[in-house]
Length: 138
Image (cartoon, rainbow, N blue to C red):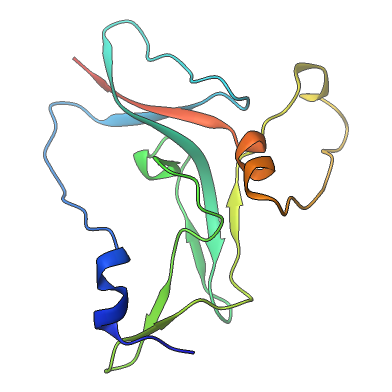
């Protein structure tokens, strides 16, 4: 059932856009290790490699894997909620999906076709999602 805006507000993150001396970039390992920042760069945060999401109907979105927005600090299988209308009712839809960069064993990185599968249990999902780090040049 749709929830009123006041009921979900404590669970919706806020962001701030800040000017930085250089562009921040995301690095992805495609395994469970945290990729190191290059020499002369510092870490802003570590996270999980997020590719894109679908929305209700034909909507969806994503960003470049270099973008800091592709490295989310926490893994949630549905990292978004959809709010619509003047009353601001919010709900999760069963036909909305998130897509994450998975871990790939070194011997399978150049295989002819990737292995497909659906991961249902939370810890299993977390273990199969690539790790990332967002870095900023000093």
